[in-house]
Image 1 (cartoon, one colour):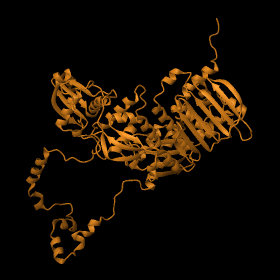
Image 2 (tube, one colour):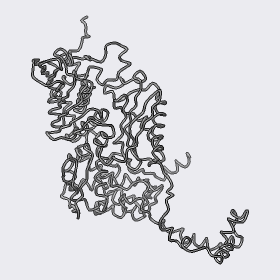
Image 3 (tube, one colour):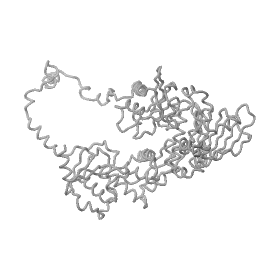
Image 4 (cartoon, helix red, strand yellow):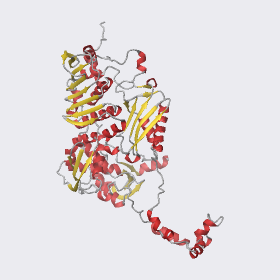
Length: 623
């Protein structure tokens, strides 16, 4: 019987490794930047074209490579970091596996130019699909220049699964920010399509955070420094007032390597527990320095998931460090004991306390309650029983009236303004005609009970309104929409990563009523808005769209416009906790049941549950 087991050819093995290590252009950017850092570079220049699909180039002034090293670095498991098995337990560098360059060369056309300080001329190598096309001397500066062209040109299926340029570019910016954040002592330059996005000078961590995340953080960062014998925790956390609804600006670094750890994220959230809302997330950039032998960074191919020797100890240290920093800088709710200037003009302060006034005050019930022994906890008997019936009359007057409205939902769309677009009332579903009855009850300020002929519906008000808005935005996107011009155009600045994202969706925002123009580096001018956006919320509405949009881009089958419409629907919808009148509930149900798909929300969640009389009897009997 012939042998059937054979060794994989190198080019196939490299492509398999590339499937784990190089998932998208951002993966190649990460590996190339980390190699430049390990080479001792003090200045690194990243050049991107066509969101990395056409070109990814990293130039550095590191120590460079000899001709032999330049050839060997593209072999599998070729590394300068590991000499013995003991080295695996003392790793402080980035690329130690020796898979990155081999994986990149297996799915792209690669050109490397490199020279060491001791060599007079450098080495140029061209590799195509893991095959070395040429290796020859060349003239170049000390360091390395690695250019990756036509990524995934030989793997069409992988290239077809790449997202739009906007999405891929955002992933590249995210990887760049993580690497640049961890290395403030290195200067970075980031050029996209011949335009500079970042030009970061060497400096301290706080300067780097502000340069990467925005100048508005200048006075909003609280330093964290907690040295112990077991672990050292340093970095910065944001003040509670800059917390956001998403986890956008949260960075953990272990031995200067970016990691993802929901467990440690929870440790920081615990420190903010009484300072921010349950649905808010604080900003933090925290560095954990620990002995390499106490952590396993070889858990995941991208090394972003790690395992600590004792997770609970690290959790406690992180939470304590953040709490200590916040308390040290008095970042906590406090009472304001400063004197109001209006108090100084009160009669009790400006006029003398005469003898006549003193005698009159002594007979006052409150004065006696707090000056006579044992009277502070008792009411005057005469006052206790007099006019007691009047108290109940007052309660009866207010028992049936609604509570006064507060301004706590000022930023949310009011139910009165929700229905700015008239519904097509002639288009009724069969379900609406046969079973829908106008009897409505709101429970927990979140759900609506709607009675029917044979039972009732339990409707999620937030998901119902999302479906209504989603279908209306779909109609608006396919027809010209009127834009309400701003009386005074507003200028606003965004962090570089958000600016890249906004530039990519400007045409789609225009079709939905937002007229935004680019105005210099990372700055924009808002010229017009949809009519239903409240005055004063213009800029915040765009910021909320960006936050929700960039965290919904993981849905692979959705195009850019579809994600944007879903984002707008979820942002503008009535939230749980919003009190609705009976007329508002009735209008909401009418609009829901003329939708094409009233059963499901835009994200596929079930909007309502239908219970018949039989179902109710079964529930009661089984209770």
